[in-house]
Image (cartoon, rainbow, N blue to C red; front, side, top):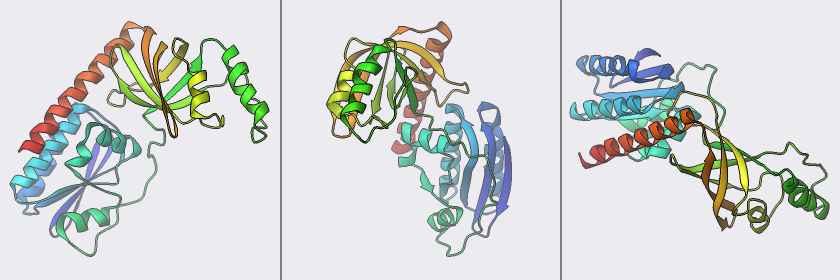
Length: 272
C-alpha cells in the first residue's frame, strides 16, 4: 500500500492506495502521528483506491481515530471504495466513523471549512459487490419447471433461461456451518412465493461467495436449504453446508474470528 500526504491548514488528507493489510498498519500510524506532530489536529483518510482491507487494518483505522480524538481533532473517511464501504457497513464502523462521499464534504465535516481541495482522480475502484452470492441448483430440471414455466406465463420474459442459469443474491450471514442470503429474483419476474418454491427447503444448491476480509477469490460449496423466509421484495434462504473443502471452512472460521475482533474493537470505541 502507498500513502500520499496532502496537507491543509487545519487538516491532513491521507490518500491510501492498494491493499491495506497488517503489514502496513505501522505505516498508517506513523503518518497519523507525523500529521499530529505538525500541529494539524484533523485527519481525513481517502480510501477510494483501497481495493482490499483486513480486520487488523480496520483496527488500525480505529486506533488512528482515537489518536486524533486525543489530540482534540476529528477524523473522517472519504470516498471509500465499494469494497471498503461494504466492510465498514458490515462491521458497523460507519456508525462510529464519519464517512463522506467527497474530500470536500470530509473537510467541511471535520473542520468546518467551506473550501476543500479535490482529490486527484484515478482509476481502479473495485466494482464487484463483495457481498454477492452466486447460486445454481444441483438439479437442473428445477430451472425448466419453475423458470421456464414463469417465462411462458409472463409475456415480459421473452428470453430462455437455459441450463446454465445462475442466480445472484446477497450474503446475509456466514458461519463455518451455515450461510444465509437474500434474493430479489433478478430478471426472473418470480413472485416471493415462486422464489420460495424454486429455492425450496431440502433442495441442494451450488454456492459461490467471497469473504470480504480475506484476500482470496470466490469460495465454493454445496449447500442444502433448511429454512425459507418470504419478504415483500424477495426471499431469505438459510442453508447448511453439505460439501465444503477444509481450506474454505478454515477461511470461514477466520472470517468469523475477524468479525468478532472487529465487534470487540467497535465496542471499545463506542464505550470510550
